[in-house]
Amino acid sequence: MYKVTETGVDRVDHADRDNLDDREDRYNSASDSSSTANTTGRKVHLLMATVLSHDGLRAATANEDGEVQLWNIASHGTDATLWRTMRGLRSEVNWLSFSSDDALLLACLDNGQTDVWDTDTGKRVAVLGGHSSWVHFAAFAPDDKLVATASYDGLVRLWDLAACRAM
Image 1 (cartoon, rainbow, N blue to C red):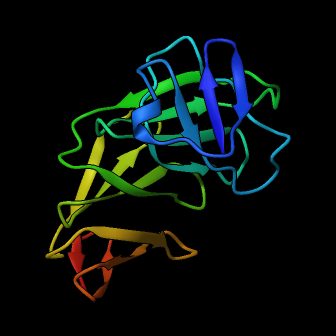
Image 2: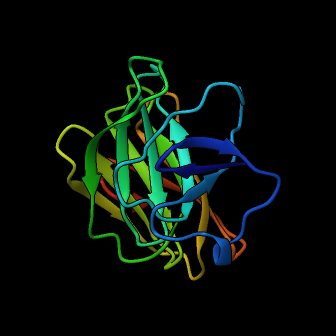
């Protein structure tokens, strides 16, 4: 677990919401703990989800305020550059997932829907609704034409992305 501060990224054994202010954050590293990106200099909140793009050039993070931020990590150094902020999510984000070409980003929400975002324009292009509880996972099929969503309502739904409807 790491804490992002104005002075850099520090490894911590435990952090909770009460110990964080609006200049600090924590996140779990899913892979190489020696490779972290400094995202300081901006107001950072508790991160709810994070994912790396397939090409390794971008990262997406979702904060507790319902914003999704895309970061340029192409330099593979210690500094990440904020590339785009996607606003207007109607609920807290639980999971993020890139399409195979990194052109689309899924954001699973507490309100039972999954938003589909165009990463180049930063615009929402589809809303996959219909779950009665929060969506905790979503993934694209290898051809990016279908999306699977899983919810705490006990259902897994398959979606035709072009038609924006459940199959």
